[in-house]
Amino acid sequence: MTSESINAADIPGNAESAGQARRHEQLTFDLDVEICVVGGGLAGLTVALEAARTGANVVVLESRHVGWSASGHHLGTAMPGYALPLSDLIARVGFDDAYELWSLSRAGADYVRAHAAEDVIPGLGFTEGVLEVSNVDAGERLISHLQMLSEDFATEAEGWQIDRVRNALSTDRYFHAVHYPRAFQIDGRKYIHGLAELARKAGARIFEHTPVISIDPSGIRKRIATPRARLRASHVVLAGNVHLGEALRRLSDTLVPVWRYAAVTAPLGARLAEVVRFQGSVIDADGIDHFRIIDGDRLMWASPETTWEARPERQRGAIRRRILTTFPQLETVEIAEVFCGAVGETVHGMPQVGQLQPGLWVASGFGRQGLNTSAMAGQLIARGMLEGDDRWRLFAPFELVWAGGTTGRAAGYAIGTAMRARSAAAGVLARYRERARLNAANRKAKARPPRVAAPHMSASKDSGEI
Image 1 (cartoon, rainbow, N blue to C red):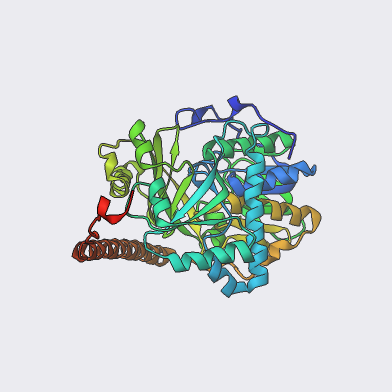
Image 2: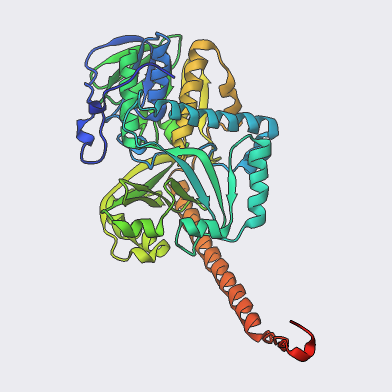
């Protein structure tokens, strides 16, 4: 645990206080540095923090402001794993490397946990427990998955039967679940600004509103151009997302942009506790809905997502319908705030982490599970640059793959729509089968002939009983 800490007044707590976050100046003078990080999101700031702690000369160039996109607009859930399912990861790289990659993802979550302590970044509202729920009756598959997690991948997880799930969540849309007791959630907006403040205190210099126009990665000293200054650096870390721009088109073209829309409801009072009795995050195993309670009686809910950007306010009705579809008991729920962030999803579903060529590094493509994986990537790259740690090579099988441009985005949208439709149909069928089983059991119970009690023999004097 680091001894560094920051003042709670330096970081925003919610949408209303976001403007209180520390702002950083634009770069207007030339610099000669050891490490230049492009992108002021979770990954870039982790690289900067870890490198600055070793005494390296580090600058961060952010084209807008810290955490302006996905890094500052997420539900703050941290748990082990990647967007690529564990079984697919094993099939791709083999058990041994899959185990190492999974262990790195756990270490990433532990990194966030350590920095979420009150004496490091205060006021993050840390709570434990994540519930991954299934919208179909998948008991046998659940047992197999649990065995793999606990026995093969040393991950603390437990299976919840249907009754326990529905006792925690008053809806018939969910069946079995996997509970991760050590997974957790924090205030994502506070965390990104807290991370920036830690990096600044460690010695990193952060410049906002400083887009990169061009990078010349040839030679020992790389050359970076911005609108009002030029830099030279021994290492350049591309820690941006789909917004890297023309200068870094080679990287941004390997990502499918996905906008994830989320909302916070108005206070729901005591009725929320009647339908949601689980205090951690709830994630649909199909990746459609993701929600949790905040501020005691409000819901933060993420759904839907699209490969085409739209104004967040236009998704207000869609999110409200998702809430009411799952919990119709809430009836008159009102949406107080809607926000979104664009994540970059790779074709293979794994992050892009490593060295593209000597001195040119990449940390990108984290998809929806970015809180733990960006922390992991930041540590790997900082240690790779400064300590020669080569564990980033575990990600070598997941190279840069062109995402298909506009055609890829259209295909991604179509695939996502089809998957949501298939999930909805599977859920309807599962609930129909459940009702059919219950009705058959009730009919069987009614058809069973009533038991006839044996005649009661009263004691009498003639019987010899006293």
